[in-house]
Amino acid sequence: MIINPIAIFHSPLTSKFGIPKQSGLVENIYGSIVFEPQYRNADYIRGMEGYDYLWLVWEFSANKHKANSPVVRPPVLGGNEKMGVFATRSPFRPNPLGLSSVKIENIDYSSTVGPTIIVSGGDLMDGTPIYDIKPYLPFTDAHPEARGGFSADRGLHLLKVNVNDLLKNHFHNEQLDSLCAILAHDPRPQYIEDSPNRIYGMPFAGFDIHFRVVNDTVDVIDIVKLTTLNS
Image 1: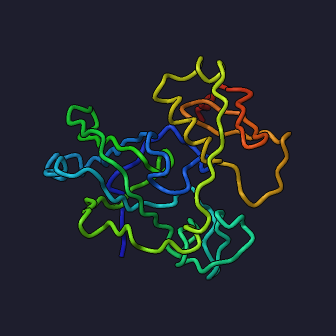
Image 2 (image 1 turned 60 degrees about the vertical axis):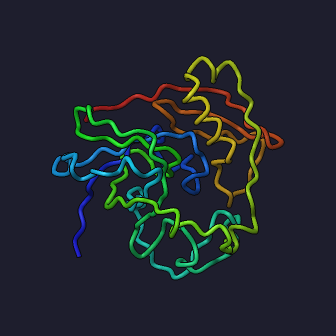
């Protein structure tokens, strides 16, 4: 079977570092789905206004290494335990396909690139190819009583984000809320030894966010404008 992208996802997150670990974790991060030229006919999404959420089938396009092991080390377990790849949501899979549920915020029919779907809660980086879109059906897709395996046992531990003037001066309120939520969910790799002196960099909305974590508090210490080099 040969499959080709039907759309491209656009997001303020331009690298794997900082991407939420699951869709829906950061509800106030926004992205847009822009269809490939052959799918820019509004008939392709006729009736979508009747739904609140969508399933996106997409590619882990930033992964350069082919998966060759039946087991992986899930970050939620600190990278110290192995689990079967099909018992995890690891991006390193025999077929590098992701599945995400996102909320429809708006459908822009006036865009110059055809109907564009604005969504929130995504865990896709900018430029991710999307291979299919399906509506989320709450009467069949939601199972609130279901067990969550090892992931459910870990729960969520949110960091405190120190919102300083550096952040306020660079981002408007919507961007600031999104960035703070991403940082609160701790984008750092979970499998390395850390120290309060370690400084991390995370691209967001055209800037490189330099931060460190001390005693469960995130301090942003510098924000650098990213430049695009034309080759």
